[in-house]
Length: 438
Image 1: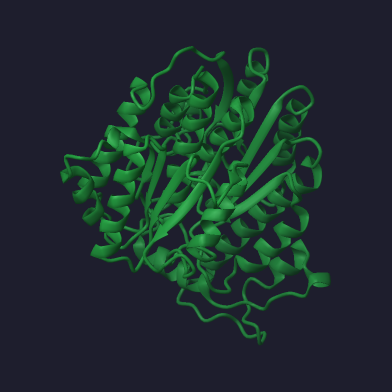
Image 2: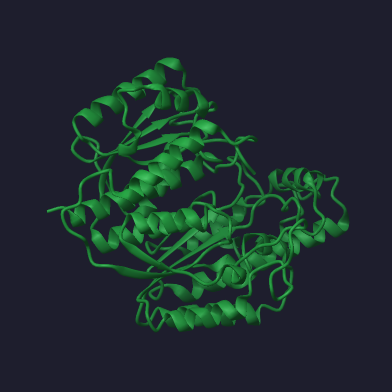
């Protein structure tokens, strides 16, 4: 679900220009080339944020990204032709074979579990089979890759709603199921927090009454069974992947700051996830974040400082997050494995325009941006305000600014999406630039 219903021209132009400048190497001069690394990547699906943006990020950091053919991980909505095999989701068995083949030439892997076990994000919200032996065998194959390779996995907590335009679902079904998923559930005690108890509590309020909904029984059965399937798959990975997988990133898809049907799932996942994993709101930035973290591991850790403009740092990031803006930024930074410093100005600078910001905040950010550019301090810009077009106009209209020198920028979609995309761009590119400079 998009934070903005219409694509903003200013944001699109800025992203395009920053991308072109990064790919052309004009951000900073390079005096030597780093070694080329090959990373095998299985994307969440074939949308640009999971496909082209990750490819551009890899190219900007001297990485060869190896991917399966698109038809193997493509999602076809109701108005699209099916894949070559006649399906509307990715081909899980062929992707398994592709991974085994990629193992012959790649030592690094970034793999979407939603794609490998459900044929993509949309499939993970819809499939409702209860026999998970095939899915578990896929996971076992993936874990076998960990023996001699560096492997990152990413996965999701199923979102609150259905997918519009898939299996006949419309915006009405989306709104109905999102309202149902957002209703408060009973918060389980720690000793009662199990997969089965979570699933049993899906239909009920804290008082034990059925959650009111206008959804049909058929819709609810599909919804509950899909959630249960998704939770069991994630549980299997968490119980079998520790000390094998190098990093596991879970995104809470299409969430809410309040207590919802996702809350017990999130709490349960956190009890099983150690230092080898991270969990944050949003989903579409996970592939980029995993790649940026891996690039940092290859070239060296990045140090950065974050500055907020506007009064929204300690308020909910937006209506699709599970915490405050500052918490979302900090969780993403932790997932990217960077060093956060607050008392240095000679590190990568992250400038974030928050919700509730006004014209004065935008002007203050622009002034800081100009000062940093004058001092040749690297910059990442994140715009999660309600009106990104206003900052976009200032960025595009100020002749003293060189937006080609931004190492990262995003105002796309939810706050967490924008945070993850911009930080991934900046962290990956800066890690690379530090490695290749003399």
